[in-house]
Length: 116
Image 1 (tube, rainbow, N blue to C red):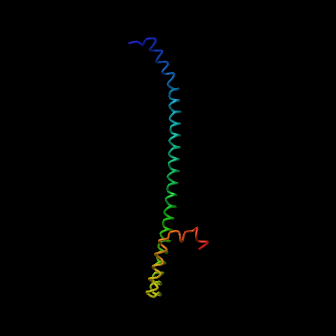
Image 2 (image 1 turned 90 degrees about the vertical axis):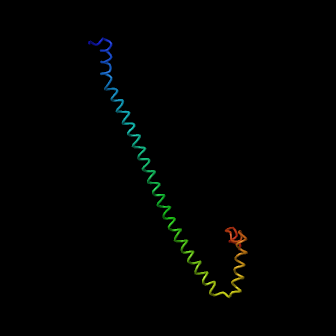
């Protein structure tokens, strides 16, 4: 079976163009590799930023938790001193006054502090 002139010419063109096709395919693959690498680096940077933010939030939480415990302990101590040193009739008056003040939300707002 012999090849016709057209088939021979087609085969020659394919063989000649193959190196160019390989070059363009290699170029495309390198561009794709570069893009994928940039995406991975960007994802890694984002992941590091998220980890840093998580660490900061954890630190803030621990600080707030410590502050809460300190304030709670102080309030317990004040409550004990309050009960220990006041006579029962004075306790009732102070409790009623505190309840009344709690019903008036603007009484101790920051805007009122300088004039209070």
